[in-house]
Length: 340
Picture 1 (cartoon, rainbow, N blue to C red):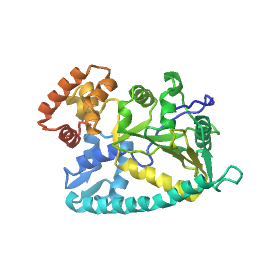
Picture 2: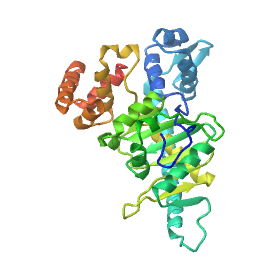
Picture 3: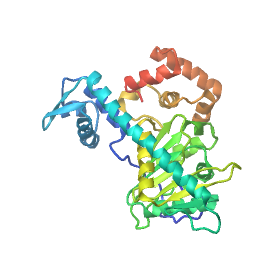
Picture 4: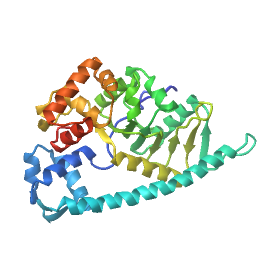
């Protein structure tokens, strides 16, 4: 996702998850709980590829959801036992992330207290323009080893992305050494209401970006795996007011926050290619994805480039088809039946 400042043609946003793609992990776990003893061949027969299986099984094992019996089989443990235990570990992580908020706020307050004739707070540079934010973003991608994590709400940085042309969004990006930069992009559901956002999602999806939607997030930050982070803010007058963080303690806290939000986000794909989703049309799959993140009919209409009346009719048909009484229930049932 290029920015306003001139960016070399060799910069891009490629995407890969920091751990196995969560959607694939969920699909594999849902398939696994149908077996007392899970064989690798069961997952292959269910349509999963070897790479996803190899990535996901060790993670499920580390989370205590399955127990290895031998090289090709695992015992599936009861979900009513393992899921509460896993949730408790996530809650511990959430508490740690919340505890970091006070430290981040102190950094911000100290940067605000700096007068123009004093040296800036060590480890934080104040960015007071879109141009400065663009330059900081170029630096983040240029210094990344292999990965960048983005969390985007409606902010100057996000608006800057949305103003780029399709040609700019189609660029492949690498770091300053020419190595691909892998990115996880997590967007607020509020962006679905913006006119250019659906087109940007499609264009970046075509480039292979891993994209997720999180309901209600208000934070915009970009952090790489080399200890550099950008926080995008707006001051009381509505002017851009970003922070470029080079302090490793603070950037690590930001990275942990981004990873935590990612775990609860809903994967975004232009359309499901999974054979299990073949019961639905491509348009129905896209509508279900948008229903799952709480998008309005108007936002869905813009995303699919159809009329709102058409969306309302399709939504009613999907609810009837899934025997769901609410939009949220339709998303839950679709996830349960592996239609997303």
